[in-house]
Image 1 (cartoon, rainbow, N blue to C red):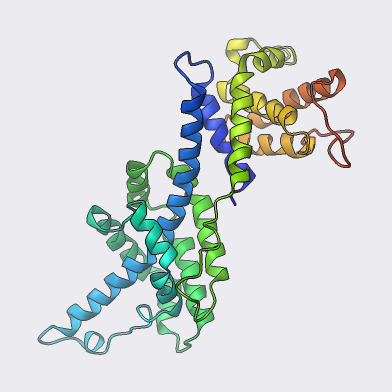
Image 2: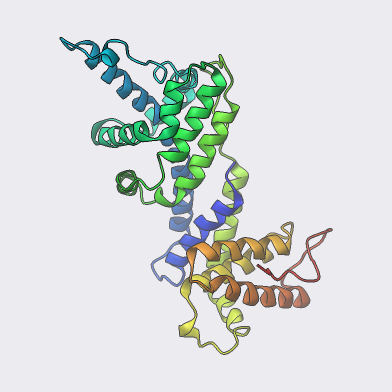
Length: 322
């Protein structure tokens, strides 16, 4: 399953880029949304498999050293701890990962080999790698701990990697954090001696995720101008052309969620859109979105536009105080 926040972000981006477009068709928007969701799963599989070519490159370097006429002491007696990592072997043999990457043409070969060389070079300079390779401990848990550190360290602040991901898919760059989180959760669930036929824990797509995202996007797009005009009634001392477009998209989507999903607590809807505003809009947008969206929802509860039933779905105050 995919996090609801990520699904909200995906629908928000489509709403922001397409709202008001005379050329937009709902079918196109729906297709773009489903493609965006699919690409997140692609990225998860792609990143999880990255450790395989890194280990292969390490073994290639060992073999080159052994073939030298006069190898150094280190080359003649190489440290094979990385290439013999038990968890890497489990990932390598996993049929679901291999088949998915083949079906979706996901590969670290070709030009992507340069990224692998860069990741390997960065890794060997990091203290966690040196500690792992020098340790006399040989256990599955140590292997797992190393891989978790690898994925946490080698995919941040790597401009070469970021450029490659952006070139391969416009959907990928903003999803790296979520995909890496999924990779780390997968590493926790692998067990020693795991069967190659075991499915990947984070690879199960949920129709409920897609239904949530599609319903939210449809309602937001279909009612965009209606809710935009409604929001302007609650904007004090602001002219329409001074309201940031992203802020308005957040407000429209938040109100749409409150209307379309009676089972989601109001506090959750407001807080989620306020948190998203902190990352995707201007410095003070979260406070603006919080105030306008709260007033709109309170008005909607009074006039019946929003129907909420059940304990915890409506509270006396839902304004985000942070």
